[in-house]
Image (tube, rainbow, N blue to C red; front, side, top):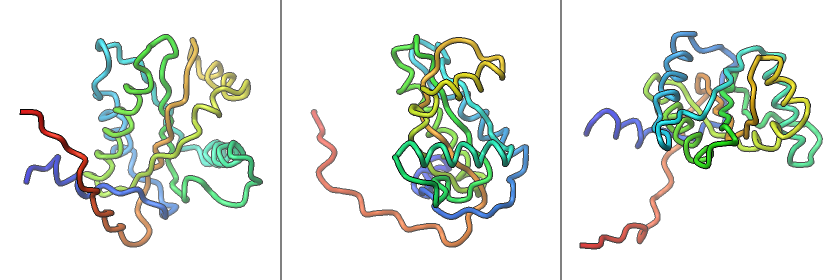
Length: 175
């Protein structure tokens, strides 16, 4: 079996991370994989915010939890120390598809490096707020952006979950 297929079959959503920060070179490699994701018309319309600052990471965690209308009492990122937020340029009709490919490339690369990952939603709702629009402006990011997802990454704390059985009857050949 080839290396890519092995990573695909091995990748799981991890729900418990160690607090230890992954190596910068591993984070950079994961980001690079995201930047090489396919994109509609080759526009490369997604950007990635690499959040390794604990204070900002914890704020995003609290805000993410509030989006679902609950008081903060748990971490939606399961303790992962790195949050890679993928945003899509609102002027691109393919932004959600393109951003989704960025997310998948990053999750597979994390797996290949022995790190865990999980896709957490609600980035769209966060980046619709004035506060997060201001964050982008403060970073010098111009334009209108839609949050696609958060890729939480870190070292796995515990066992890697088993794969759920694949549902039958999901492939139809047309010969």
